[in-house]
Length: 186
Image (cartoon, rainbow, N blue to C red; front, side):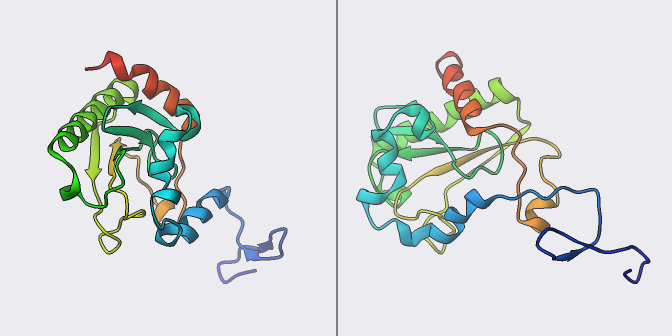
């Protein structure tokens, strides 16, 4: 018994705990992201944003291919529909884009928001580019912009307390919905 008079128990690994109504959400797939980060990407030859366009759309989670940039689902999303807009060129900084790349980058970002609104009706968005490793970029060597759809109440204690985010749709389902709607919402 603990000091509140609740009987403690041990899990299968004999770790002490207090019974509660919560199931544990394990996200071992995120370990590759947490452990890898900057050190895994040393150039274009092993950059996931350079490699993705060379594979099929479903395999790479690409929802749209433009002439100079493309839109891809984030493999580690904050919310369902979390997209990244990436130039095909391996450049680290927003100021490295050409005028044409900048225009298409902006247009694809706007279209991504339109498609997300049509498909999943978010009430807001977070858009952002983390520039450089110190600026928080997970892959600093290849520019990418995050487009994160938001809904009232989509944030809770899990990411803060448990380091876990509950995602309500699979990446494959979200990719099919967004790719299918891309051309019809301009």
